[in-house]
Image (cartoon, rainbow, N blue to C red; front, side, top):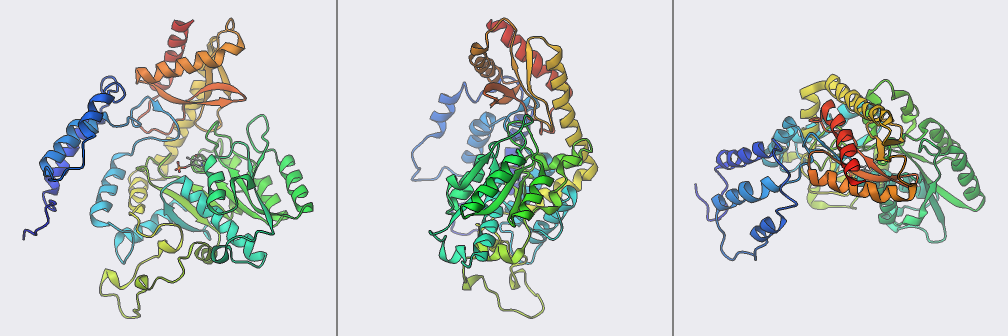
Length: 484
Ligand SMILES: *Cc1c(COP(=O)(O)O)cnc(C)c1O
């Protein structure tokens, strides 16, 4: 029966079909990327005043298909290797769509609630995350780090006799979080949001392979102890965003135990590397982690918006992120379950910073169900191979220079012919990178390695082939040659 509401609530098949035709075309990534060059056109079409009268579903669909989708972001295109991001695979898209319609909240007694838990258990199985850790799916690595450090803060201050989530921090005390200089910036922000301050995060130096120098870590811990500064957490990065370096987890875990502090492992990108037997030994020490972060929306190619945090102690996590009492969320029922609304299911709202939240487990479940551990392992190994293939290609070419040996699937290099002086190379490579992006076929991102501007592909994209890896090197060489 038709309601009075003006929004269409039926015709889903028709609407999705129209959108899908445009999405399928988008996913062919044909021709040069039009989004940058056509910016004025689509901005003018979209940037209209708030409509007093609606235009109706059909007009919305045609603008979506005609103006929006075609100018979308091509992070899934085979030559895209920027940041640590890619576009989702098909099963994950279908699962997300299913969740939007049939699992519009992750709570209550229904499959989408169950799949949150199953996805977390499967992720833990896949990545050797200790099973006694409580998981929660969140929006990404930034929030997952906040959750892990929130638990670390809770435990530290409870031991000092204060509940920090109830009463805030004790201003007479001083505290520190230890991370390497290569740590992701979201860790500093998490410290800020948790009231500890960005400046509480000590940047411990790294060795030649960009791994935390544990000698320096020990000295920092000892110095702070003698000054009465409390250690809140030691943060290890398992796969840094600059070079893919994996901190010495085992040594850091030992120091965490010796100094009785929390051991947090940020493996948002790199933890999947544990599936590649060549690098798996670098993850030794993971079993001692009190909290672990991993991002399904990176190497698993889940749609952006799916990260995971695992924390040692569920009750501690609840104390860290409790809202206090929320009566309307409390269901009194000891009876047989007759309705999905007779319970909240597993109460993820108590384990993080979100209340209403979309289903995220279905996406992870769909991906793992589709290709299994074998399929994921094969992807990780292939991508780690790509970084090595590129490093080899770079070393064969006298005009290219390797800036960091690949550990996982990142390879940092630059265009550096011997006759170009060092002080001109940054500027030259900035221009190479700009022209690469303008070409649209091969789009890596860039970083700075030991003070040198680097071209930095990170291979996590399921659509990338070995030919795209060589193609990037060839293109850097061609653009560089044309510039000098
Ligand atoms: C990507 C990444 C983050 C941030 O995660 P988001 O999902 O972008 O919020 C944090 N730490 C590491 C090591 C990462 O690779």
